[in-house]
Amino acid sequence: MIKCVMIQLCKCLAGVSILALHVRFCYLLLGWIGTFVVVGVQLVIAGWIVWAMIRAPD
Image (cartoon, rainbow, N blue to C red; front, side, top):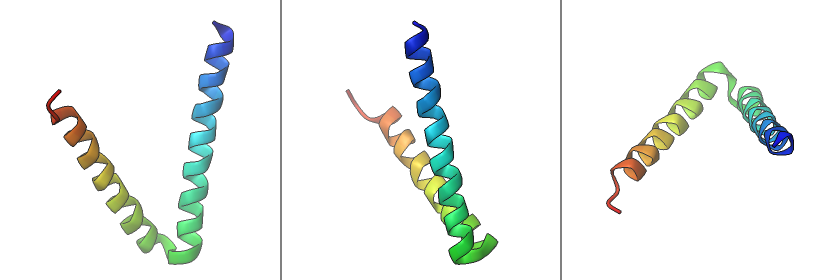
């Protein structure tokens, strides 16, 4: 049980680290405005995919 919890925590930490690096890389390339645009577009696309998955027929 504790092994599964630790694996999940490590996966979550790795995901947050990758997201932080992605935002930092966008900031270095594009600045704050470009970063907000890129992240905003990605969030809209992710929300649309989640909405489509929920509404999809079985």
